[in-house]
Image 1 (cartoon, rainbow, N blue to C red):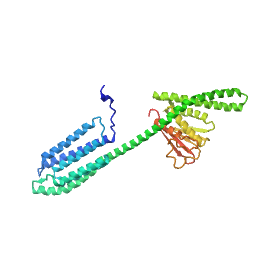
Image 2: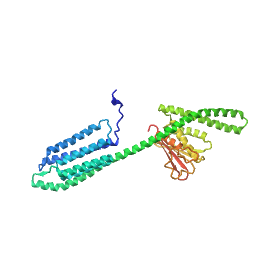
Image 3: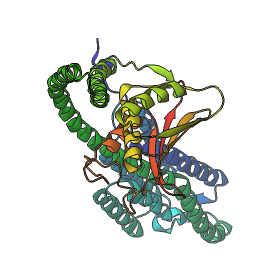
Image 4: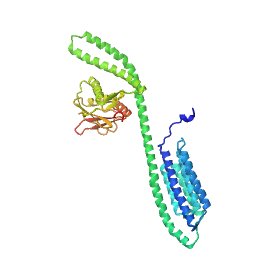
Length: 424
């Protein structure tokens, strides 16, 4: 098998590659305009120009366009240095063309501003300075060394003077149009790339934090297995020894059920890890999944009371990994910690998403902390670890959803969980 099979896919939407493609279109537009202008002047025959030198410059510019098109088909990344070299070649070719067509007296000399504006927008500062120095040097040399344009007749000489002002206006209009059409999208591509890089750095940092938490959780789960088994045995013996005490029997039964729930959670953790390894997740309709989670929540928080309102119609199906159920449990526990009485749950959906709102009647979110919620080890509860909302957001984001918390206008906090419908 050839090494080409192992090459990573190229980033066709990277800013550097897009900008080089836009530069090709810019070159082609300017090259066509230059060829047409020279052809018109040659056909009229009123001016004497070194057409051989101009033809060489235009041919070199056309060859550069073809070379760049072929280069973009190659699976190599476009670097800032390569992009700067392309801009330097454009400046050199334009300087050579001006040398054969009047030098600094050519009204289109202001086109120097276009590659400089592109450089200032798309390449590092040092390269931009070097390109500016190159353009300034070329312009300065054209003040001293150039091939002047000779008019054949007096009428042609008068036409040359009258069209010079129009040429200056046209040059400025072309520069403005090219800057608007090409430079602005180049800058937008760079801003988008910088934003994507910042998002990737943020995701990488979050993944590192999740890995640290997962490592600790795996160790804790391994250590909890033995004491939970011991507690289960002792609770069975206590229930046998105190059969004649109904009040104590109820408390022991509750403790035994909660220990069983803890053991079940550890088993679910192992099973979900296996499903994650196999890239499979169960599918449930949203209402059935919510009922399952609420059953676990009622066992964990028997003091909490809640009321569920479900939208009428066919209930959509969700892909529900185990960590998503844990994320919902975390949100329910946070709501119960704020105020366990009369929690209100609303399940609704549209053609693309399923939305679950959990409203408590607690004190609400503290001022100034709403944007920081979800940061690991940041908590509004005195004895909290500051991991529940962080882990919930990570799990929901992995499932393609989002978690939003905000204060209700009538008091309390609303936790909004939005998930994509399966198959969308």
